[in-house]
Image (cartoon, rainbow, N blue to C red; front, side, top):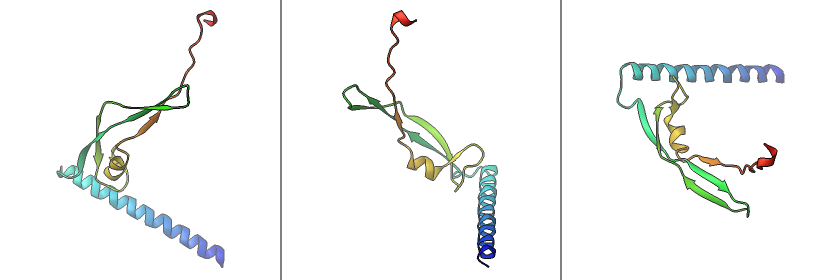
Length: 107
């Protein structure tokens, strides 16, 4: 009895996800085909590099801003990320690592 209910819930969740993804895809395709002004947007991405030092401190350096095109949808489609995700992650943090230099004797 419990397995039957769990199976029905799982199948229902999969069907619900498929319907949501399919409808999001259809809406995005129609909006791009009609070239609706609000379907694509460019968002400025400002990367921040975290550079560790030998004394256990970190230096924060901002990289050059870049423009990224995003799609107004719930899920990613056609190679574009959704705008809600791009705007949320518009300042990615990139951690750098210290690589020791190899002495000339070892080369």
